[in-house]
Length: 238
Length: 225
Image (cartoon, rainbow over all chains, first blue to last red):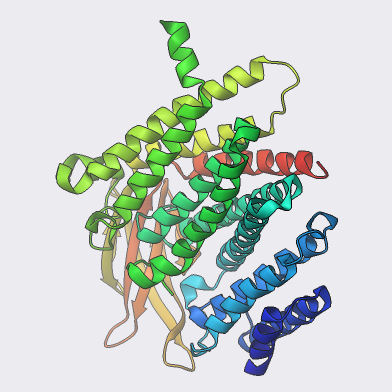
């Protein structure tokens, strides 16, 4: 079924029109469903599955934004979301699929909830970054309002992911918190978006800074997800 | 003097700088060997580790704790100040309250936490601090299609009867959690156990619930705006 992932990557990158984006998303979700059915669980282990899940999450979370009337004036926005989702789908392709059953410690709904919610949040942070670019390119106040909404919903998903991760950790490891690089960067990401949401209280003079922070936040997200796994040793690494 | 202090701690700018401080210290700490698996930070309660670790090794954590301590006061004073004014939404302050409880929970665990790891064969036993013995009656496991352990469990006999522990299903007894971390079936069945005490777990859970309620209220309020 890898052809579904390849098709989704190509269509996402070519999604200059919304219907193409929807078909790409359909292929991405169909691929994830086929992996899920084959494994009997959510495909969340290993770089291929997580990158494909990230791509699908980004596409799914972008759907209400690309159909929003507030982004109608930003012509490249649909393509931007598609290119971002397509990039992660393409990055997943070189990695082999890992078809092993879940290790007993990961075989719990708390783990699946923890990881899935984190990827929904990552997707929304990516969309918020694109909306930040839209605002800086003259997309108007509407783009900034949408960026705030995307980041707020993403922050809510991410907070729930941390809560479910803490519950899982308590039942699996005996503690809701471990001092490892992944936990530290997860906390950094959470505090970063806490700071971002507080910065809105500073008012209109900080609008450009707010938009930039939404862009930087996605870089912190990418480092938390990919950088920590590649550069640091952690129990969370894939 | 008091008014000046109150105004300082009520400041949004102070909160923003402190959050930046926490992020920077955590980022620096993530590259430190202290936060690696071998750093020992996860093997004992945080306050014990901080007392024992050389300052050159733990300075980032001291700075981080200091920033969080001031941020705690900052969040508390900001919420009190906002709630004194009429017509303010309680949602952000519920989130603040959740955050404060989670910080308190970490403090409780940092002071009163406990962790002990032991490897025991079937038939062996270990003791609780009050002298009660826990006997490992039986260790079993299933090997999956790829030769990996697909499941394992240990039956433990305590004074109140026989209990089973398996991954994600620990046994809670007298404020301690007994976890089975790994099992080897040959040449004799052996299991790796961990006994944990997390005094802050309940407080952290309540804090997380309050935070989530506040977060959901905030989302509902922002919807359609």
